[in-house]
Picture 1 (cartoon, rainbow, N blue to C red):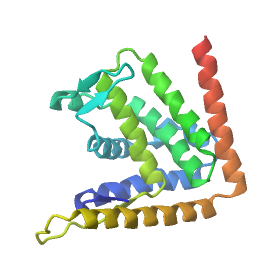
Picture 2 (picture 1 turned 180 degrees about the vertical axis):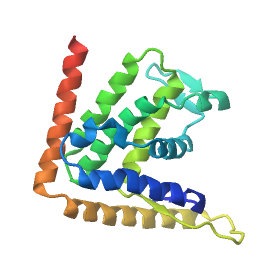
Picture 3 (picture 1 turned 135 degrees about the horizontal axis):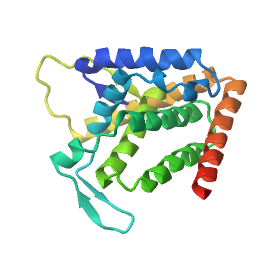
Length: 211
């Protein structure tokens, strides 16, 4: 379970209010259709979170290693509307995970986004990588696989290998516990709703690509 410093706490609360609160009030496709509901603050917060996970090097499909400079990473940030599109897709991925849908639904939902990114020839390699990180960041919050902690005011000694392993095991326990809570909150009706949303999204995208 990933930690966020206190400096991010207010932004996280804003995110929860603007996204999670709206999600709780919206059902079906109405959420996906109302683009204005994903606020600028939400986009900015998730963008900053995603940027922190941007790698310096990646290997493309052809096996070629690509190195990103600081400038590349800075320019990888997507325009707001493109970012909102990624967040909407990630919302469905997160809901699919929360409701215990088979993994192939999450994969199919995400792969549509990947194909759309490939179609956008003006996007740089760094932007395509950022897209995947933004998707990951959103899913992380939707599923609750993140916790906010106040940073220690005292100097902390570096953790040993065993301590790091223990922390990871504890984090996994918390994530599994949260996953069970999410599953318990997802009604059969909601599960079917999310399933249909993903199926419709995939079908629509496939039809558009054939044109």
